[in-house]
Amino acid sequence: MTDAPTPEPTYEKLVFSGMQPTNTLHLGNYLGALKNWIRLQEQMPCIYCVVDMHAITVWQDPVELRRATREVAAAYMAAGVDPKRSILFNQSQVFAHAELAWIFNCVARLGWLNRMTQFKEKAGKNRENSSVGLYVYPNLMAADILAYKATHVPVGEDQKQHLELARDIAQKFNVDFGAPGFFPQPEPVITGPGTRVMSLRDGSRKMSKSDESEYSRINLTDDADTILQKIRKARTDPEPLPSDAKGLEGRPEAENLLNIYAGLADTTAEQVLSEYAGAQFSTFKNALADLAVAKLTPIAGEMQRLLAHPDEIDALLKRGAERAAERARPIMADVRRLVGFVG
Image 1 (cartoon, helix red, strand yellow):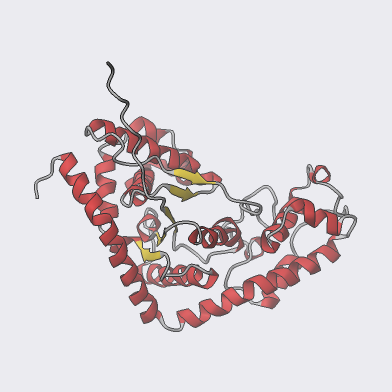
Image 2 (cartoon, rainbow, N blue to C red):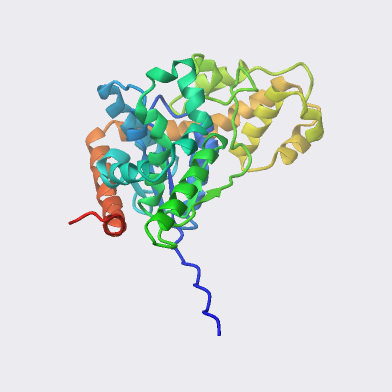
């Protein structure tokens, strides 16, 4: 007679994601993350965080950090994150993130962190002068997710490696402390078209908040005239739009504008091509500009309305932090017990 296999633990479905309050959010953040966050609210409970602790891995002006934290929270809400339905807060208000990150610092291995390509890219040749926080950033990201036992994490290409590390840390914690299935293995959420939005000036580079050229991106705070000007100045090539996706090979700027249109219109690149095949980019850019203005200027207007009342944003973030802390409290009590902490 053999023992019955141990049943797999079940976890409540839960989404966790966040963005850093560094510079203004842009079209890439909207299409690559925010639009999908809104959809996910309809499918399962969600926790959305302004990750201000991650932001200080490189030096931030404290006054600017506070302003940017409120602006990112306003962008979340203006885009459609509902703080009544989802938990919305800034990371530093919930101490579980820092506490669990330290425990994970003691669980993760140096060899794992040495393989993280994003640290190498961000630190560059000045690695010895980088903050320790930048190096252990992935452990804090794992703590962000696992403090709530989140099961689903929307991530871009640049964060997939960090999510794999979070899974490794969860598994090692479970084994080290004799708690099989305590932490889940969080799954990446794969999103649809337009998730990887490239620079309007260089189709081979991702749209970035830190790019020196304002014309490389469309900010969520841009007005209609600015959006129109940036799209008109976006780099393209002299060829008309092709009739199928194969015709976009070797044409990164053309493909980028097409994907942006598809993302804003909630359609596919193939459908856009069927409508605009053979069109010159002057015609297509006008259509794209009209669409972008229609979709993005209401977000900018709502952000302005919210930011006119910073005290209300602060109060909302505090309420969200209280809800998040309440959710993390029993999980962290179990973590402390498993680790062997007294009290």
